Length: 287
Image (cartoon, rainbow, N blue to C red; front, side, top):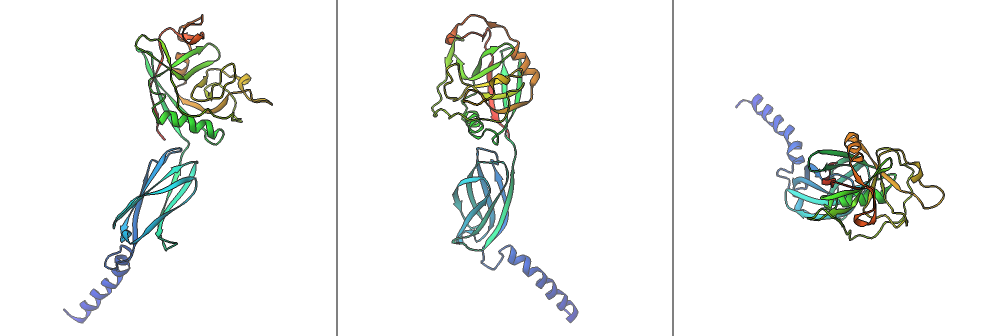
């Protein structure tokens, strides 16, 4: 090998040294090569996975933005995994650093979108879907409760137990038994305090429902099939808190609003119960 070839070889090796060090190759130092996140949705637990080298020498995660309850899942030489609970919209930055305030190794920026839920609806012969956009900024308590009920499976296999003409559709509180009779669903969560929303009860919006005695809202919700300004909050605490709106499936909503109902009070002691049960066959948070 001539002197020119040797010089060119050493120049190439020297150029590669920074890259080798950055990857942790041969240096024994901690480094992060990449990161990814799953479950990046409002009200859900997000899992962040960091890949790198020498991570078992001692690393910890840090977070900037609305993600709380940061916890370590596990740390090995080439991978470290953490979780946190998403409590807001917009950007969240999660990073990795050496323990006890050590050097920051890198970070991942995640954008949390406005939540959406898909409700599957069927009466046994016809089926469709309502896509609901949930607003945790205007009504954080109500939005969080609705999403919790969706993600726990509470709304799946429930029914729209009342369809009030020129008012709206009520759901989230009842299922049906083997004889098609209404069966109240018990939610083992505390009632919500009254939450005043600036959103109006317009056609296509969803609001937490309280009955005529204005009991605290819990799981039942109203889909307004027409504009219902009489349900908006005034100076007192009488009102229904709007927390979302149907963004796709208004035609399905109108079909449900037109189903035949019993005029006289029957099951549960209230009128407007559909003659044929209209089921919520599925409920899923899709973003």
